[in-house]
Image 1 (cartoon, rainbow, N blue to C red):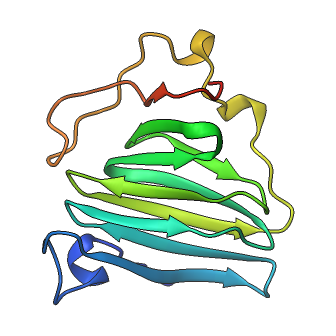
Image 2: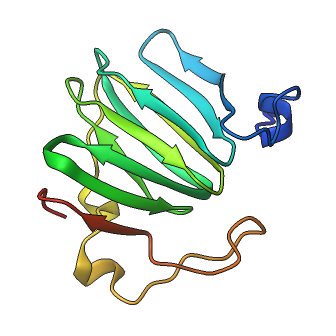
Length: 148
């Protein structure tokens, strides 16, 4: 067994908690078929996620990010929620309070219907509070001209 450590302080010890810091660290890979990384956004941090040759999964494990997607879609994503980008899609991620995300890139990945964030599935559900996120919120909120 190999233990992985991806807390914000180990991702960027020199820039930890400095406003606007963004750090990424590879965590695991499987013979080029998939890669798993951790992304840290300090308060005020932002990063552009470029289109990749494979689908990309982003899971917020701590904090909150705002994602800006095609068609002026803006989504607030809290810990316990995430999204899948198809190979040709991109987005911009920003965090005013700071966040830690797990990123998975894989050629054969699609969202499983069991995990989709649908109103009938998550209606009234609250996300557990974290120290950096003292108020529980729903998994995401949406604004813009795209669909939820």
